[in-house]
Length: 472
View 1 (cartoon, rainbow, N blue to C red):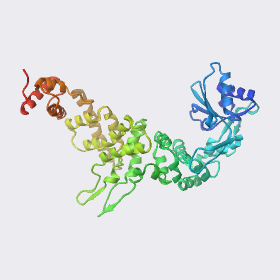
View 2 (view 1 turned 45 degrees about the horizontal axis):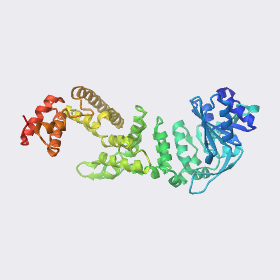
View 3 (view 1 turned 180 degrees about the vertical axis):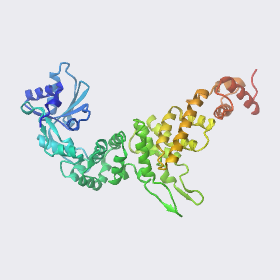
View 4 (view 1 turned 90 degrees about the vertical axis):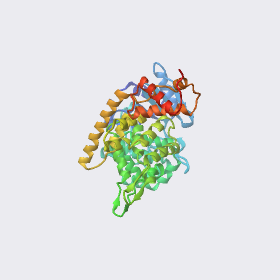
């Protein structure tokens, strides 16, 4: 079949002309071709393979573009890249690859187009459109990738054991594509992932997290996490999650399966947010439950303090996977640590003081926290489900009312430590902290409004109780 119509963007004609002048064969390959055939939004990054020097072709293409965009050359990899019309175009020479057992970095030698297609991870990514003058737009499909697209199958061009052992990141990519495209992974391929799971240990945390983020960015991440669990990869990547898949029974008391509950929560939250870090919070919100699980004859199964411990575990996970240890990690920690607060609130009478404390502690993240907690309701009892969500509506309304009246979000005390020192002629010390804390507590409890005059009168009264005299 010919796909000239899909290659009307002028960049393809420029590349074709450059290849002709250099007497090279060239093709557009990989994700762009796959997405054209799936009628998906075309990728903004385009891979060009040349039978010859990809770097030479990139430099020639730049010459033929009026503004001559800068070519980035990566000699070690034999690749070059240029940006044109909001597209990143990467050029590589067709190559063969072989691997050492302890590395995913291949030993590369020049090859044919067929060699290059064989080294690709999946048949659906080995598809190519010719950019050559004699057959421009013709599809080159040596591994029946079109059939696999139609049948929604993820399959490797060669023996899957070799494909996954050579570059174990491909195991993550298989699962990610299956999740993104809602495809099935071919049975022999899935079995090969399970056999080669231990090879994931040679992949860097950054690469693994990149794939996890892409899985979490899909509409239904549970598809990917179930594959990761069933193949055994999750044991190596996030053992804190697999530890949740244990349901115990003592004296007729069981507890819910917190692993499958977690996957439900992640899918739920994806209906209401695109924020990958809030999705991470949903994924990790119950990780403290496995290590805090205890059986009590009166209460049954308990998980006391799991949110606090879970928050500490978040940091260890981020460190282990080389994830950012900045405000993104602190946001996930905060969400995990506070994840039960609105739920507890929704179970009881919703008091102003409890809402003030919630808003004070969550600050700007209170909306995200409410979104997480609403996603956390996975009960199959329709009455209980409705009751929780009705209560959350009350909590949300109270948040608006309390914030309008008391302004405790990102709270700043109405009276400063410097003013307290001046009022009572104090040097920096314990008394200032005690008085500031007393003001904060009085505001959160609703004893005084969040206003200067009220705070000043309260401080003077508290100081008198502490034996401090106001300087006249």
